[in-house]
Length: 160
Image 1 (cartoon, one colour):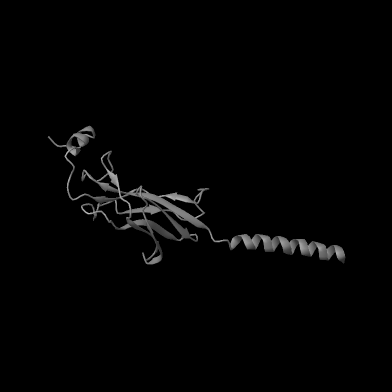
Image 2 (cartoon, rainbow, N blue to C red):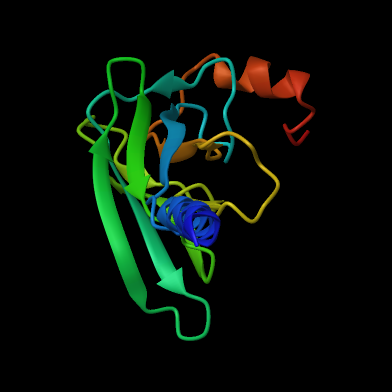
């Protein structure tokens, strides 16, 4: 009888230990940078600058309807970098880093195609780390720097 009680206690302890691990809420660190496209070319160049104090949001949406289910905001540091902590696994959703606002006068227009970046926030990806690196997000400068023509010639993006 004592042996049966001991086995039951061991099995019960194992079940509690296993079920307890299922209720641990994962957290993810979404990391990225926000830049100013000073050459107005649609991508980062050596002339691009990084924006301190820009507001960024991580938002998750239901795959079926696109309804927003989760949001958390962050602000870039003096290097234009942000790190936003996101709670929970978002396996059945798609999540994105989204630009909200630039404090920089002359560089506050969202750059088309660079205003949001998709991030996967689920354990079922094979990614071991909880860090998720988003593509850099960009604002477009109101004016193009004078040295951009020469710089873009290196990319062969300048028309004759």
